[in-house]
Length: 280
Image (cartoon, rainbow, N blue to C red; front, side, top):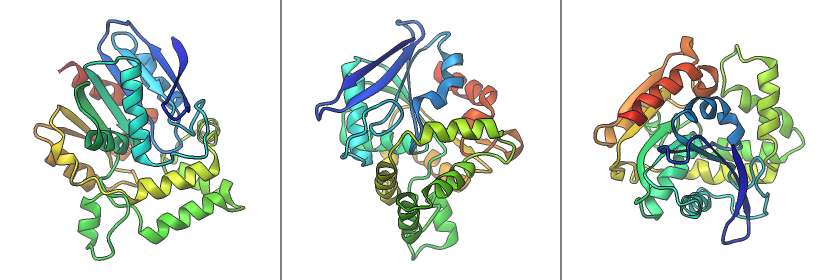
């Protein structure tokens, strides 16, 4: 495995890893909010057998630099574009989990798509914050999980004296109740590498976005993965799938690890579904 850094035009070192045959098809895993590249270790171990697997930490996350600026999804999309070009990755399949999907949508909106061959959107709704005028059905189809007020309440909690409890409570909601204490502690140790201010600022920006005008413009093969036990309504992921011609939508049920981090709780099914898509 290669473990190294690239330095963005604004001077931020991004940590990345690469594994698998150099001539293999390129797959880039893009982590969600406060998640690290290491959290894809069950995918790297599987896909490195025949794919060239790249993972990286967003700025402010994992082993990457922690600058005082740039905690917006558009800036993360620019970082992704720089990574693809700096490493000269071509015919790439991008796999975005949670906010990682938003990074792909932002990249699609702002940058050329010439290096992107396929995309996979894993458990991310197109509009996290609900419009107050929406019906519950409209909010579910938009993939909304909270109101604008709740988004600010979460950011303020992460900045406040009880930040640890707020962070741990949110992290627990990403997994099934059967998650082991050991896995929870490891996950929290990964996530809290992100500074609290960075986590709060990024949540405010990520949570304010509405990608519904971008998603229908995606014109490469797409996989959409939903989870019945996730915070994100399945209806929102189904909406994403309907907007992209030929997209395949797969839903994990609760009894098969169908929670927000299903790639961790049921890597066997997740890897199989993703591999089938990549090899099509």
